[in-house]
Amino acid sequence: MEYNKEFWDKYADENESRNNDEFTKFLTDLARSLHCSSVLEIGCGTGIDLRKFDDSFDIHGVDLNDHALELAKKNIPNGKFYKEDITKLPFEDSSVDFVFTHKLLNYLNDDKIDKGVSEMFRVAKRYIVNCELFGEEEQMIDNNTKYRNMLKRWLNYKVKVVSNVNMHEEIEPEQVRFTLLRKV
Image (cartoon, rainbow, N blue to C red; front, side, top):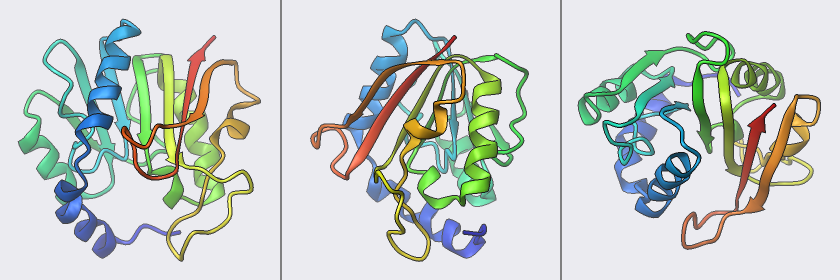
């Protein structure tokens, strides 16, 4: 699953139609309840999942798509956005309280995910959240996407599993697994 600029430009343009207020409120409330002050979304796209984080948070987003990042900067002027890959995050070790992905890892190949998990662990100070389309065996969904079982990818890291459950359909209508980890 190589990066396809045309696919991701179209995805960014259609992103507003995928706005899910329940999910973004859930993430914001979760980060606040965990006393986090800095957040990073990897694969932030247009920043749609970061918009409910107010100025009390230090907001960061990483994406490869220039068009999506332009929209994110416009929509969240107090955020800091970087054109970078999940395998090379532009942050110091243990520098971000709350690192999350939302249906990004379903688009990446296994090698990139393994390197990305290592990078997420490196930059996370406290919590890591993966919300990905779930499949125990990680089968292909179509030519671009694959179900993921993120818990198994974290088993060799020093993390405490706080939660690993399917999200309620009122918060996230697709079959998304919510994996919350505490870095130890």
